[in-house]
Length: 444
Image (cartoon, rainbow, N blue to C red; front, top):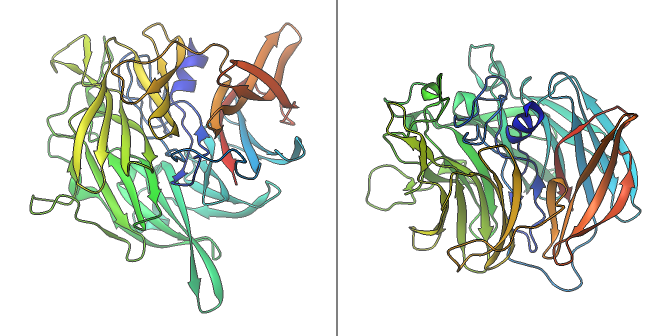
């Protein structure tokens, strides 16, 4: 069960509203240190049990569907980990089905991410953003630790999401990245060419007085190309309520928020008109993933819920999927979970069609197709690979691991969502020996 719990605690992803929306794969959660439990919020880097909330995910590339021809193949970043001290990220060329190269990090909590055709690794325990080149090798390693963002502490900042943007400058094109730092309530703005933090956006004002864990629980950044905004979620849960014996997250007294950053000015956008603050309040609790439905100009938000009452409740409530109309600034609940499953990941296949990943109370993992106009999921999919990314409307890319007495056999595979079958892309992507995949990210 420990390996499964660790898998729930890791998430990867970063997203843009590109057609067909290649996603980044991993189980929900994020972190650098700490732990959750069977029903608690995963601490940064800890395990989140079947009832656990995520410590923050890096987002998911999301789109509204593609064309028959589809986008270029791109390359898949595939991470293997021991969940303790080592992570190796291999880069697989999907045009040739060959491993281009790999990089190993001395961190068991490092995950791949992608944004705007750029590949990254978020080293969460050590507070590093690694920018990868086209061959999957290190182009830049950037410190996003506390001193780099003007703070005096020494603990991890826990980078959980990254959005890359390209702009014109006097010297030509330049690249920046906005990096969500969950444990210090900052968004770091990074010059990718210089390899340094240039400014930060402080979100500490959104921490409620009743929230004792010190974090606004930012997660799931999504870039909206039409408006030049980065949308992100603030869960505003209190992880200090995850205590023995139940280790269940108590329902917070404040609502989760959707915020938006204007990329041109690096300032918050007022999304709620004349109401106080800038954010849109959500009706469900504990957002763990988000995906953009481009055709309907709405953000779908997956929420893992909480337990009520705060003095030891045992029933998960307020979990499901909420839609935010980005034009009108209104919200609606599309799906209310009928059971106690932990809702982990959300992938938008096309406008009106999605995939949802869940974990049941016994830590069993499940994937379901979902027509978003329907109140229930479709029949469960079988044989879905680990840590999948969405390749196109009909296919996933992920990792298949089989363990024998002789060790683990690892393959990167393509999964057909209609036939529910897998074909091999490449075997043995890592130079090291790993029995778990912490995530994938499709770069193109």
